[in-house]
Image (cartoon, rainbow, N blue to C red):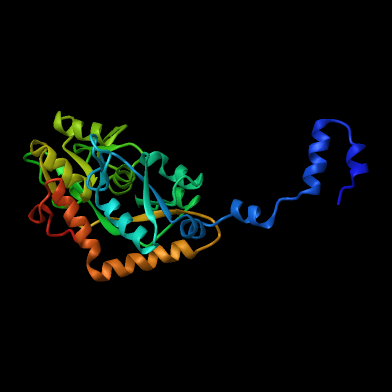
Length: 283
């Protein structure tokens, strides 16, 4: 305890402030708030914060006129929020900033992330939402049956730099000629302009790309079937209750058939019908 005489003897405003702070230490409640876990914060505030990425149908779609969000990630997030007895809040972001948003506690969970080793160093991942199948959009007349058919110098493959498409191509098809571009749109444009024979995309994206522009080519699933998990990312906070809750919710939703419905329904919203989905692909 600091006495009045001790405080009076201190010189300077900064020293006085330090003495007052010593006499009035931070309460345990405030200290707890500073280190509050995601699960505790959601239950206290009754808000579940996620991020959405415009123009990434069927994952996320933002209506320009109304600002309303749709997409299968949004459908899942709405159900998760309901299960947590919370309201859903959506902030706009990009794939590149999503992990930073989790780390900085701007959002509680990010739907649709691939659990790469570099990401796993800084955030935690749930069980998979789905296993996203690697496909190609092939130009007319180009119909490879296997990934080995693509692993040749004369085959030109368009990819977006740094993506899972890029990493997959470099690992599985090191002998192919990669047309590496900055964005997925540029990779698709390379195929459209004849600079590439095909473009690698996971099936969720390739189905939508071809539906938007049928002249691109057709979606093929080379063998053997190759997939990557698509998960939710959550902040590392030392309390695993939120991660465990989401994992349990995912398994429960899958058992009810809700996961398949959310994906199929939102594919339909962007024009992709069940018959458009290759028979090799399962959600």
